[in-house]
Length: 116
Image (tube, rainbow, N blue to C red; front, side, top):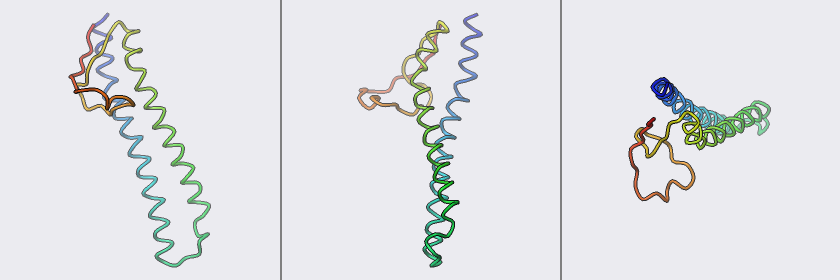
């Protein structure tokens, strides 16, 4: 039973991390698109209102992507709790893992191990 739980964690972990990374990439891409649209409008001396509705919609989409990113951060913080409910525990940081608040206070990084 514990082996299956550990296998499940090892299956989900890289997918979760990829989804976290994708949320950053999506927000960055949307921000770059908005910035370029604004630069192009100005460089071509177009009226200030050109593309205004589209820029507003993209800005709303960017805000939603930033909110999604915040939710990933909150979900990431629940990892120890979820592992504990599976009878597993984690410590350290074996795979590249984005730091969460307070992690800068840690004296050093140690490898993450999920154990039964």
